[in-house]
Length: 331
Ligand code: KG4
Ligand code: ZN
Image (cartoon, rainbow, N blue to C red; front, side, top):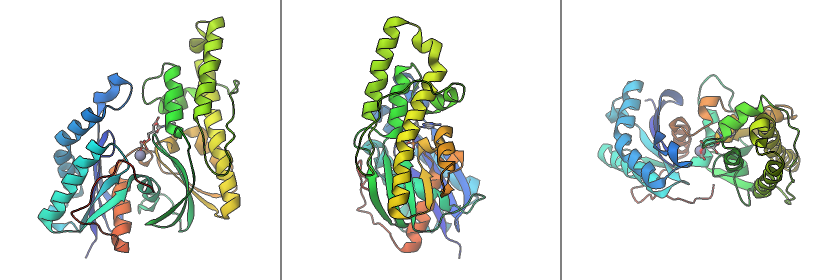
């Protein structure tokens, strides 16, 4: 009999559901919340309300696109954390209700693990083999992890302050770019030259730090604008190229060290920042077997939650109705 998994993602501002049949993606639905655009960031209460309004329709749409009847589902997977608690709670309640009503197992999925496990979707892109070195880079996380199997992740290093995505978003905000600034920074960087340099962090081991870069950019802009009030406007593309190069350099250095230290030759990238063309290009130059997610799977989606759910289900890693959402959750 086929293994049919429904996966639900509500950790931040995307309400998403996907259906996977024997590891093959049948439907992947995302409803992006545009209500936050005018606020320069995600407003948690607005996000929870929007999830409540959309979740039933998003799940129904994913099932009908997959041509799957609810009663044929094998299990339901959902994002347990990390994320915004009110948002997570909506997916948790919905998944638990389905599990109870249909009498099928519940699988609780870690959002950042899923960003890496999306590579196992049986699609037209290559799949890594366990064990591998994972780099998760998103708006809330930056970690290097040793991945042994679908439920075994060991953190080798992580950011001590801001995440890589935050570094893009916060410095982008200084340049007047709308939230989230990452995608625009990437686009403009391609039109400029990396000619400005900023302070480099000195963090031991495999940990990262991005807050020093943020401060360095702030002071650099202040002093440049004292001399030329239109400095940002006149140098936007070069500023984006320079900031992007600085963020990529920080990530690249630690990936190189982790490859050397662990001897792992497969590097798997996951999370919103893995869409960044500068980062992808820099990693492609390394002497490793590199797994880059296709662009639709870089930002938050339910396909990754469903894939992680499928793998965990196969490993027998099931949850029960006392399963609770967790705003903070170690990988
Ligand atoms: O994984 P994700 O969709 O959500 C979280 O789990 O946080 O990541 C969102 C982050 C944002 O910080 C956004 O600016 C960044 O990913 N991002 C990018 C690019 N596309 C998205 N950063 C740099 N370059 C991009 N092309
Ligand atoms: Zn994410």
